[in-house]
Length: 95
Image (cartoon, rainbow, N blue to C red; front, side):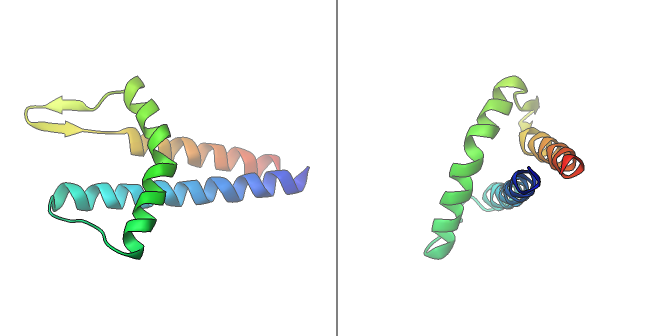
């Protein structure tokens, strides 16, 4: 049973880092609209986007981005990171 919690904790850590990478990609894309990754970065960006997209779409349905004039604040990545952190702490305390 201990090994299951260790593997689950490891997977949650990987997912947290994928969310962190998604945050970085979204930040770069919002600051530089001309940015297009190429080569290995394109493959890594596609993997990160694919892994995190379903969770973020679900969170955006529950809590849509908040519009302030022409600016939209999207808290889905922040909420996902907080939830993964809570789950990771829960799994580590059980294991």
